[in-house]
Image (tube, rainbow, N blue to C red; front, side, top):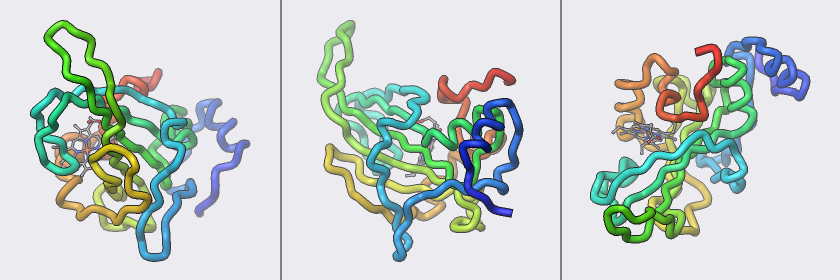
Length: 188
Ligand code: HEC
């Protein structure tokens, strides 16, 4: 049975009730051509942590070496965050973005200051839309460059993105929760 999560359901969740993912369907904005709409308020979602990738390393979005060190901030849509942290499984309609931020050149020992936002990738869990994909995850890219980002994106071919998520996050529903300090659950 599918249902939309209501405020009551979220209250129940905050009391620690475990709800199976297939019972829940959170809304995600798709178009009739299959493209997804870039969320416009992702910086108001829950920031679950920041990772630093150093200059010259390969960015997985375009497989090119990055010209400056980049911070990667991961944001989770708040309803899916509440359900996962309840604790529960990631629900259908889970949306997670990672945003890249370029930095100013810094000498060793200097503070690494952000210069500009520099790209956005996204992951969506949807069992109806991605029935055959591992973890029912669809992967998207709104560009690895400064803003403005693309407003819509087609799902990226499974083989381009899912290999590491399959190989290294299979015990975490294919989402790297253990890489994000903000996704540590009290019960774990
Ligand atoms: C080389 C291995 C690898 C590939 C290929 C890969 N990822 Fe990931 N991905 C990771 C790792 C490791 C993390 C956790 C650390 C982080 O956030 O960078 C992650 C995290 C993420 C996250 C945040 C949620 C989570 O699972 O932690 C998103 C969104 C994401 N990746 C999207 C993508 C997209 C889109 C692609 C394809 C363009 C892709 N990934 C390809 C390794 C990979």
